[in-house]
Amino acid sequence: MATLRQDIELDTDPDAAWDALRDFGALHERLVTGLVTACESDGHERVITFANGVTVRELLIGADDAHRRLTYAIVDGFTHYQGTAQVIPEKQGCRFVWHVDLLPDERAGDVALLMEQGASAIRRTLGDTGV
Image (cartoon, rainbow, N blue to C red; front, side, top):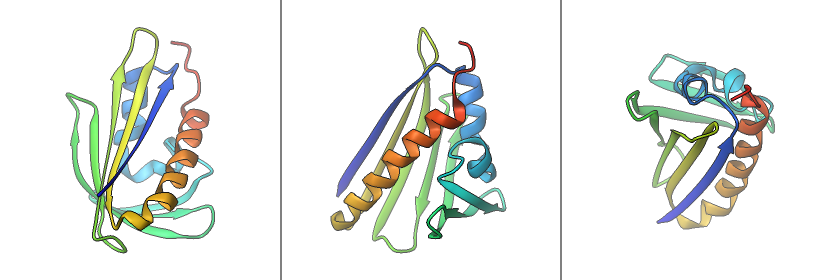
């Protein structure tokens, strides 16, 4: 099983970063603007559209407010796909840690590229909130 990770340092208030991550239906507006252009959600499932037109259906597995951690899954197109993202407070700002475990391994390269683009979009979207 492939395991991918993005570790993103942000000069952003941890509560603000968590609020954006926790807003499952507003991914395209609050977390990865530009990379994801549309998101339709019922609160437990979302269909996202990437800038290249590809759509993906994601299921919300859980959101842990105490630990600022969100878990989601993709069930179509993978044998296994689980993603977690967590906002960790730092002395200055926060750290956004994003993990994905997936099968088949052959899909890891494409997912890693999207995660790199996602990390850049998170930095642009959340920006510097003056922490």
